[in-house]
Figure 1 (spheres, rainbow, N blue to C red):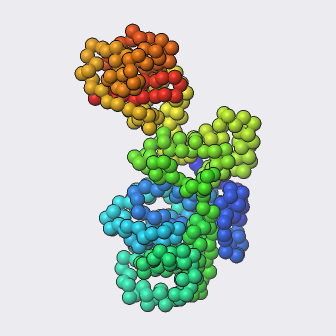
Figure 2: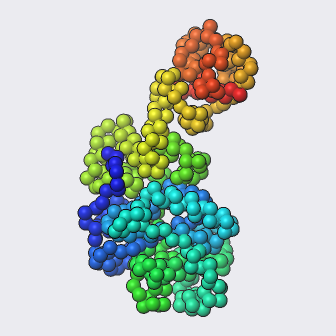
Figure 3: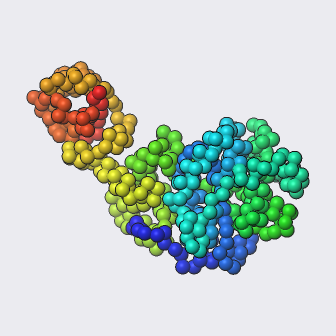
Length: 437
C-alpha cells in the first residue's frame, strides 16, 4: 500500500480539496463561498505552527497533512512558524496561561520545525512550491503604539469578547497578553493576504475565532475577501487527547520519540482509530482506504490495517529504513530467535523492552561464568528464591536471550547481547532485562 517516489497528485486540482477533506473526515467548518474561490484557480492557504518546542508532535500531524492535501490539489501551502505569536501564547483550548520563551529558544525551535516540515511538503515544486514564513519578520519592527493605532482600532472589544477562546477563560482569568492573541493572529492573516496573496487560513476547530478575526481585519482594513476552513479536533476512541501516551507527547523528532515507539503508537490503535488514521494520515485514495478497511474486517486478528497505517506514517516521518527497523524490532516480541534478538541495537533493545523490570550486574561478577540459578536469584532478583528458580528450570519455562536453559546452564560474558544485556524470561510474557556494566 505504501507509495514510492513523489507525493501523488490529485487530478482535480480546483475543487478537489474540499471533497478531499470531506471524505477523509477532515472538514468541520468553512466560510460560505470557499468552494467557488478554490475552483477559480490555484490559491495560497496557510496554517500556523507554535514554536514553543523544538519538535512538532503527532497532534500537529493533522494540520501538516491538511497542507499536504492542499498542495496535492494544486494549491500553494504556506506554513507559518509563529516566532512572534510564540512569545504571546494562544489561549484557545487551554485552561491556564503558559510559560513564554525568549527569542533565542524560539529561533532554535523554528529551525527544527522547518526541517521537519520539509519531510512532508515540497518547497521546490516549479508550480506550487510550499513556503515557510515567520511572523516575527513583520512584527519585530512594529511597536505597540503603531499596532494599536493601525490594527487595534478596527476590531471592537465586544467582538473579541464574543469569541469562545476568550469566554471560556473569563472565570479562570485571562491576561491582556493572551486576550490580544486573536488580534495578533488576525494581523498575520492580513499581512499574508496583502503581501503574499494568501486568501485562506486553515486550522483546528478551536482556531475558528482567531481565523475569522483575520478575515474580518482583511475586510475592514483593505476591503478584501478571505476564507476560513477548520478541521475537527481529533481524539482517541476513549475520548482522551490524540497524540498523548503514558509517557507524554508522541514527537516527530526521533531523539524525543524513537521510531520504534512512534511505530508502536500507531500499531496499538483500535480498529476504529486505525480506519480514521488511514484516511487522515496517508496519501491513499478513497478506494484504497475502503479496500484496506474491508480486507482488515475479514480477519481483524491479523491487524493488517494497523500494520499498514503504522508502516506508512513511520516511513513518512522517519524514512523507510527506520520504518523497516521498527517493524523488525516489533517482530522480536513474537519471535523465539536469539539471532534476531542479537541484531537489535542497544537503543532498539531498550525501546522494545521499555517498562520491563530491570537490574544491573557488574561484568566482573560473571568471571569465568556463574550458574543460572545464581543469576536468576541473588544476582538479579528476577526470581525470589533458589527453590523457585530450580522448579522453573525443571518445568522448562526459563529462557535466556530467547533460548530455553536447564539448571546446569552457565552464564558468562559470551552470553551477553551487544556485550551489555541479558534477557531473562519465564513463560511467554514474564520478562526481565539485566544490564551488565
